[in-house]
Amino acid sequence: MTSSTGSMRTSPGHPPAPVPAATSPGLIWLALAIVYVVWGSTYLGIRIAVETMPPFLSAAARFATAALVLAVILRLRRGRSALRVTPRQLGSAALVGVLLLAGGNGLVVLAESGPPGVAVPSGIAALLVATVPLLVVLLRLATADRPRIATVAGVAVGFAGLIVLILPGGEAGVVPIAGALTVVAAAASWSIGSFASGRLPMPDDPFVATVYEMLAGAAAIALLAVARGEQRGFDLGAVSTRSWLALLYLMVAGSLVAFTAYVWLLHHAPISLVSTYAYVNPAVAVALGALLLAEPVSVPVLVGGGIIVVGVALVVSTERR
Image 1: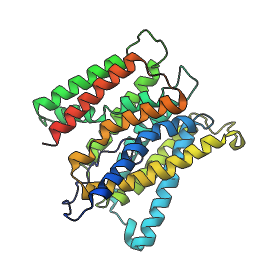
Image 2: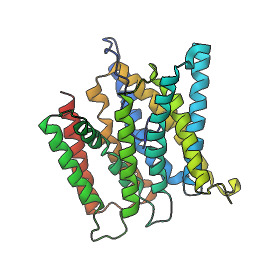
Image 3: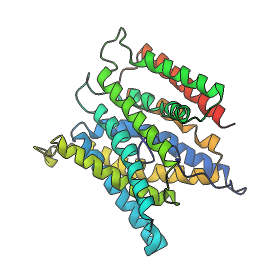
């Protein structure tokens, strides 16, 4: 989940500035390509990292490191007051960070850990996380917001695809039900965090908000790791080189580079164009998982995943109007 800070970020609470006329289309498409490919690939990175690393410890290290690096960059570029926020803004950012990262990304990491047959394949995790825009619409309905009929239809289509994807079929074990439901819970947590952040007094600067979100999320994930006893018997020497490289990729590419590109896009491109990442990322994740990890791509996965993407595309295209 990915988002900014994981595989799936929605610009909660931070409306984009007016689109500058002089922005180069080439730069916009370069930034979009980064968000498409890098965020889509973070699911694969998570799957490789947890091969030899405890899931929550690895996620906590990822977000804590990325937060500190981003904080240092902001401090050097903007001076001492760069990270100054009010107590209410700090509390809001911390709450959103726990929902997005501990609940959202942390549960995805947990679902992707474990042996084959137990761990959710990275591509399927991305498809399940793609339901976030659908869940946000349900939250809007619950708060008396009335989306368009076409938006609600898109939600219905998307959840029909979800049922096709996770229901047991002829190829048992392709989609572990417990893991799939864990990812759905992660998507729900991410949706609640995204929805709440637009209604809470967040820091004005999205980069500053992200620092505090990642720090709070990392702290909550670390507590979960300790509660699960992940630190007991953990041997750093037993971590494989590919897991270290995957974690480094998640820290730098997933949590810093792609998020920076995403925030830049929010200020330089139409939100309707930026939001297309919601249904491009799953396709990238499925393709990479099949090519690099030989993850199975069965007919139910193709059909269910395709229906989910259609539902999300319908929601996004309707909401942009």
